[in-house]
Length: 435
Image 1 (cartoon, rainbow, N blue to C red):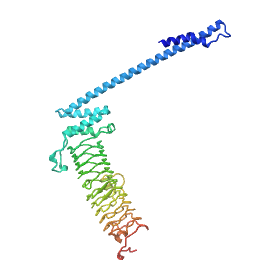
Image 2: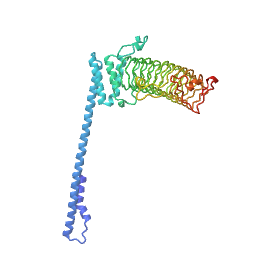
Image 3: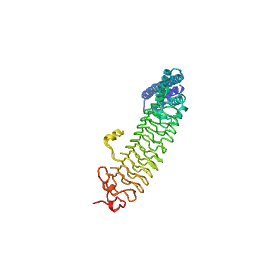
Image 4: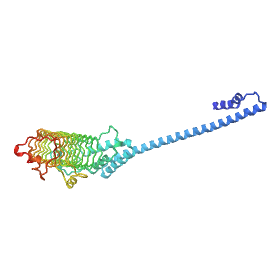
């Protein structure tokens, strides 16, 4: 206030006197000039005062608005806290309908308040672990034979967990569902990335399109589970049980898979890129259209395996038994029946390392074998009709006969494709090409 008075006095008395010199002016002219300056300066001060008042009023309005927002946020947080407390209380009700209502109330709260999602996930996983613990009586029987289903409230909790928004999870959140009995659970499209599922029974569970990347499934039971098009990239499948599971179209890129984990599983069109398995025991494996590019399988048993349309580019299949395996061309109907989309493709083993493997009576019709390494590979009675052997060194392959190369044993009497760079083993004179 004092500053404003001082400024006003300066405008009225000091400034006009300093700005207007009395030289060459009459007394009346000097007074008129100084009064003009006073009027102009006073108008400027008045405008400044009005502007300052407007700024003060605006700041006050903003402060009131911010206070109102904070108050409403506090009220909202209080309401959410009350809703959260009430929903959690419902989980302890003796009435099933009330418990289920509490589950879906928690789901609504998670949608309304992303910051509370971690707490809700912890509450729901704890509920599942408490209400559906692994039952010891199932340890002595086949999990694949069980018809048990999770209780309705447990399934409701799983449903809420499965369809939450993973983007709202904090980086440190972990889903702990170890040692649970969840056979026949419905978890389609479930968001279970990085979940801990040690020893959990998920036999016959519906896990189609589930997101299980980086999940820990150690010693879990997935017999007969529906895992079609599921994502299992870098998942830990140590000691997992997958007998009878349907993994058609599943992505197991870089998954940790033990030698017998996939025995009996249906793996048509599955993505098994860069997996490493020793002593794989997969007789009659169903791998139609599967992608095994860069995979490493050592000393395995793939006898009578179905590999039509599979891609094994750059794979290492050293000392693998592929006797009677099917790698021939597949027709469009069978391709679609196996779960494939679009047109069927040829089996590709380009650049694969097959040293020491056996392919006795294997059907390799139309397969792409360019660049394969077949030192010590046994091709006894293998069908190579239409197979692409351009540039392949077959000089150290075992069991090859001239009729196999020249088309005498194939089901349609067509020879494989060779060129001047194809190196053939020395055939006996009576087997030489009649031409």
